[in-house]
Image (cartoon, rainbow, N blue to C red; front, side, top):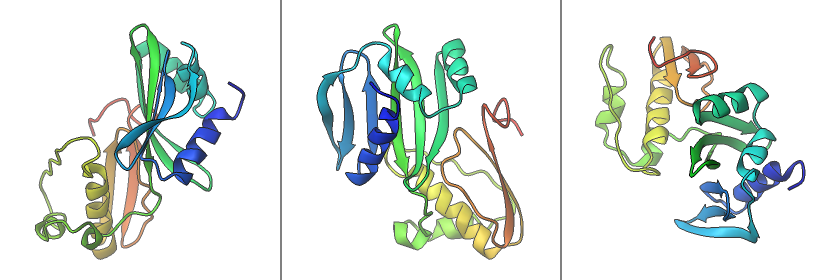
Length: 190
C-alpha cells in the first residue's frame, strides 16, 4: 500500500456514500453502502496493513496508544470530505480498523422525525439522557441534533465529554466546549 492510500479510501467512501469502512488482516478492505458490505477490491490486506493505513491519518501518539492499550477511538477530519469516527483494536493477534462517516452538518431535530419530547427534554435545566440503540440507529446524530437545538435557543455553557468527538458545534446562543477522551481528558469524569 502506498502513502495516501487511506485518504483515497476515505474519499471513495464519501463519493460512494458509504457509511463504514472495515480494514482487517487477511481480508479485502470492505465498505458498507446502503446496508450492504462489499469489497473495495480483491486485494487481501497483509497483517500490518490496517495499522499502517491508520498511521497515515492519525498522530503517532495515538498509534502508540493503540499499541499500548490494544484499542483506539477517535475522530479524524478530512478536509473537503467530513469527519470519520475511528475504532481500531486488536483481534486475532492483528489490528483491525472500522471507520464511520460523520457528516459535517448537524441535522435539525425536525428533520430526524423524532418524538417532539426530545426538543423539550434538552431544554430542561438538569437531567440525564441515556440514548441506547443498535450501531447505525442514529444515537450520535440524535444527540448532536438535541445539543444543537439547545445551542440555538438558550444562552449558557454546553460542555461535552465525548469518545470520540464526532460532530463539531459552533457557538450560537451558547458557548460550546467539547472534550475528547484520550486527547483532552483521561476519562469520562468531569
